[in-house]
Structure formats: structure tokens, C-alpha cells
Image 1: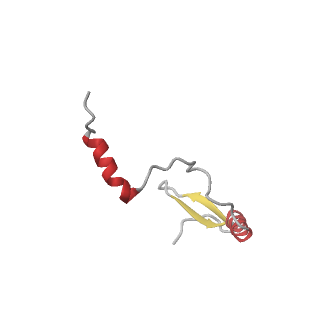
Image 2: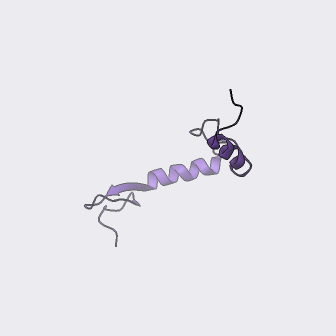
Image 3: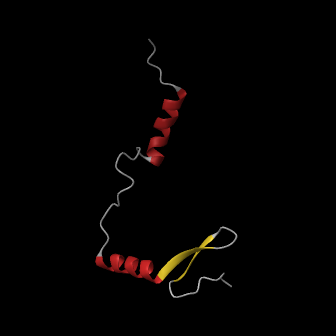
Length: 72
């Protein structure tokens, strides 16, 4: 049996110094917890803004106290 590596494996090993190893951790979880300032900003954005879908199907964000008409 041959011990020669396939071209795909050779290419992968050549690219490792550039791109590094594959990510094996959970990419869905944040690297760190949000601090108090970030949580406050998030709460302000969620209560002060809302998403509106226009007649053309595009969504955009408006102030929560805005009447929701098209921007412009």
C-alpha cells in the first residue's frame, strides 16, 4: 500500500500555516460574555427601534415611535 498523500491532503497541509487549523469549538456561542454597557446598548436598540418591511419586500429599521412609512 502506498504512503503517498493525495493532492488534496498535500494542498491542505500547505495551507495550514496560512489559514491555521479548522475551528473545532462552537461557533454559535460568543467568545466572551457581554459586559453591562453592551447589554444596555442592546436593550436600548431593541426598545427604541423596530424592523419594518416595505411594499417592495425589503426590510429596514425605524424608530419605535415612527409611523412606519417609507424612508425618504
